[in-house]
Image (tube, rainbow, N blue to C red; front, side, top):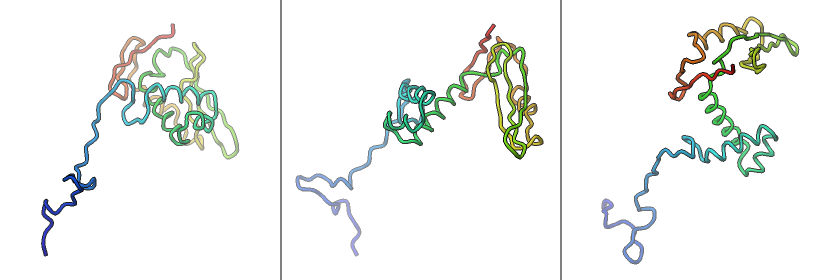
Length: 167
């Protein structure tokens, strides 16, 4: 039995190696300002898709932008994740209202936190039973350290965020 030697590789006419024998190039990965990490589209495209989803159904966006329905979902997740990392919803709160309302059968509850000064929804959660609700414990865990509106906060991505006071 003879072992395969380098000279035994398939060679095309003209002395070139066959495509299956060529070394595969490694992809070059570099950070660019117009794309998110791990994304197959530009930031502008993501922002366009996210804006369209706020005004049209997801299936219409996938047809219009010529992307898969699942891709629309992943684009939305990326844009929302970036937005949440850049903005702290609990910054600058002075007066809040917490309410728990029931809906449907079998004791389904919706807990909401609103800012009385601006009227915006700050936090909301749907739970199965009142015993599992734990809205106050979840909120206190998120805001264990009280902050003033001028104190900076470090976001999930490690970047510094500043509290923007509405007053």
